[in-house]
Structures are given as structure tokens and as C-alpha cells.
Image 1 (tube, rainbow, N blue to C red):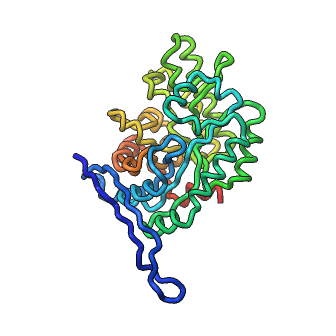
Image 2 (tube, one colour):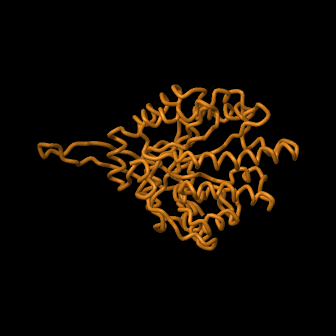
Image 3 (tube, rainbow, N blue to C red):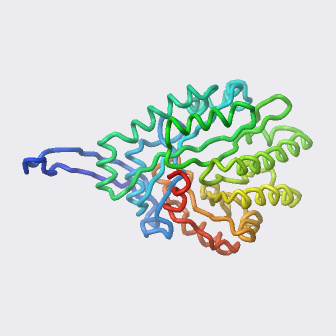
Length: 327
């Protein structure tokens, strides 16, 4: 059952320096929320979210309102930072254009940096910051970054970090380079068995190399290819373990991503098999919602917490511990 609610933020009586009341900011944000999600979750932060202008559906202000509604005290906005010189020739790119997601892709780092400079300036606006403060929500500037192996990628990305100074960086892998083509995980389901196996091997090997760079605060949705129904067989445990070993050695945390529950599945990203490997290696964990809508912030956090503990996970990070790496 859902409730159409109005979060009405009205600061009309803040005093100025002379003790006079003045109108500062009035905002209404309408959100659709489930009745059973208002209890305070065990984790009070959400660092993997997306906003309008990239591939999210709501403004940063609406995301703040959603965080307040869900008793989330720390909100990170982490839009996609995907840079590859051949990105516009990827098989998936026309679909992204149809969905209006072209802004999340850039052919060069100068283009991506310019987008994020504007984006971060919007997050720093006083109106938004005042709104967040009065909602008791702290906003952080993040990015979800696709790691690539092409020679100029790491130096270009390190330049972007120096210029943009994000509060944290999430590692993702939505693409592999196969047969001289840039292939999205959605492409894995549309090739023959041999090509699919080759792509999945490349995917897991790439995740391990990404962790080894030490550039990231945490790793996102490790078994992302399962969203297309591939890569779940037992034979992939060997490759999952190799990636987990490198992640553990790099001391990079992983996320438990609740967005897979949105697909009416009984597990998050990653699977129980992978989480048990992570537990054995004592890899630190956070819970993420990967919210592209305000009403998804904090969704299924307690369910994921229970799932993780059933897999043996007990090394949960606080928000401050996640951010410490970039401070």
C-alpha cells in the first residue's frame, strides 16, 4: 500500500542579522512512499543515488526530502562518471539516447569534468544546503565511476579527482571491451554462449584490477550481469573468488545493493555466494539503495542487513568510515 505524501518545507521566519523575520525558502516535494518504510533503518546513510540531469528521476532537493522521510541523515549524490573515447560507438549507446541518458557518458575527461563542475555547483547552492540543513540531512558529492583499462584512463581520472575533489568515489563496471567493441552488461544476454563466457571472465578480471588501483571508496553491485539473467551458475564462483581476493587485499569495501530487490528478486547485489566469500575475507560492507527515485532511498535496507548477517557479514561501516579514505 502506498501513500501520496507532501513534504512541505517552509522557512518563512528565519531572523536576519538585525533580528527581523524574513522569507527565505519555501518548497513542496511530493513523493510516493510505502506506509511500512517510515521506521528508522539500521543504517542512517545512503551514498549511492542518482538525480535528474543524469539518469535519475528527481532533483537533489527531492532526494533530500526522500532521505528525511526515510530517517536517512547522510545523503550522497553519486551520478555516473563514464569516460571512454569509443563510448558513442558502444552497442548500448543508442538505447541510452532513447532513454535520455546520454549525459552519463563522455568521450573525454574534459567533457566529463565540465559536466561535474556544473553538477557540483548545483549541489553547493545555498538554497539546497539550507533546505538540507533544516531537514537534518547532510549532502555529500560523490560519483559512480566506470573503471577502464585503456592507457590514458587512470591519469585522466586522477586529473578529474584533483579538479573536482569529490567526497567519495564508487567503482562500477557496466562495460567490457570485447572483440574490439565496448559491450554493456545488457549485451551479455544477446550473444552466443562462448562470447558470453568470455565477457563474464573479462568482467570479473576487470573488477579485480579496479580494486587494485586503490582509487575507490567502495565497489558497487559486484554481480551486476545477473540483472540480465547471466553469470549466476556455480562455475562462476572461481572468478568471483579471484575478484574477492583482490578486493580484500586492496582493503576496498563493497556495497550490498538493494536495487535488485526492486526486480522482485529474493536477494540483493551481490549474491549469497559472493557475500559468504566476502565474510570469510572480512571485507567491510555498506548497504546502498542505488536510488534513481526519491522514494527508493533507504528502501530494503533492513532486509539487506538481515540477508548480509545470514551470510556471515559483520563488518559494517559507518558513513564516516566510508568517507575517511578521501579526507
